[in-house]
Length: 448
Ligand SMILES: Nc1ncnc2c1ncn2[C@@H]1O[C@H](COP(=O)(O)OP(=O)(O)OP(=O)(O)O)[C@@H](O)[C@H]1O
Image (tube, rainbow, N blue to C red; front, top):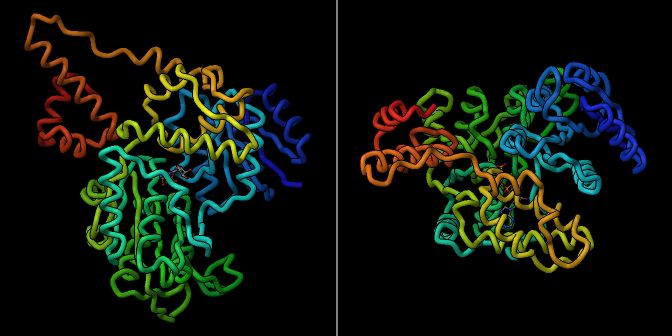
């Protein structure tokens, strides 16, 4: 019987979850604050953690970081209110298996719990069978076409590729496409989520170790470099690697040699490196957090995966794709989305991108009784977000051209900053002004 650690401060909800999960064959241990929850986690081996985002003494994000710091790969599911969704997306970045929104739907919870218990997220060697490209949506928007053209151009080369994009935009899928279209397609594709690796374990995860190299190294272990030999190694969230690991990584890429921790043996490896990041690596280089030499070595070609809100009608293709997938998974026969639903989905800004879209569609399919998705199945907060968008800056009087221009300029700066998650260099580039001008304008318009 799989044992689940539940960290949730709402006592009634805790009791409901305990009852529901034990009815489905799980054993649940509950704690109502972060401190006790972490203590329980350290004292026993759980198969899964269900974590509330807002706790009385801390946040679910901090607990998650503590759990991951210890090098644990126990899957963690964050339960969050819809308004915290941006934070939930951040939680995925630091290694949460999945997030679900409150009010929690029991069937959805059960589905995610079962998936998490089959957890293969941190390291997922590509299955030996070829991946069918029909499993993906390419999209027909201008940005999608350009992305896939670049993928097709770079794939057959041996160039190292950096894939930049917000969380959940499909960077791993792009990396898999490059591998599939490359001359290494018959070799392994190994994905490593560097965001979920603790500082201490990252080197051993990547380069392997020999028995006795450190406390807990009970046997020799092949690192993911060796697992990927002859194929492609995909390093997700590469910006999270510590400086020391970056040094080792540079050597592995430059000299094609790795040395497992605790060994003197040099092993020759032939691996193509694809990395992904949702930080601006060039900025991290400037701040001294990412080695410049490594940056140039991994960045022989850069691809940007656009956020969903920039992909126009691709949204419809994705919707139908995720609807079919949900039908198949849940044994449903939902054929379409109601017009009202479409209207909401098209006007929502999707901060969690494809991952959020997939979850919303799956949840709606699950809650749909008939053959088409009705508005009642959408999260209420999503309807609110679309119907009552955050107030914009007051409209300037139409006769005052200067005021009108300034108001539009301010709005454009805010919008761009939000889109690039307040990365000022990127915003300045998009707005076609230099950084100093951007800072001056931010000061002028009182933009924090
Ligand atoms: N082209 C696509 N067609 C269909 N589904 C896709 C496509 N790209 C991504 N997805 C789905 O969207 C979800 C998020 O994708 P993925 O994990 O690749 O995003 P990511 O950008 O790597 O996220 P993160 O930044 O969190 O690592 C996954 O469920 C994935 O299967």
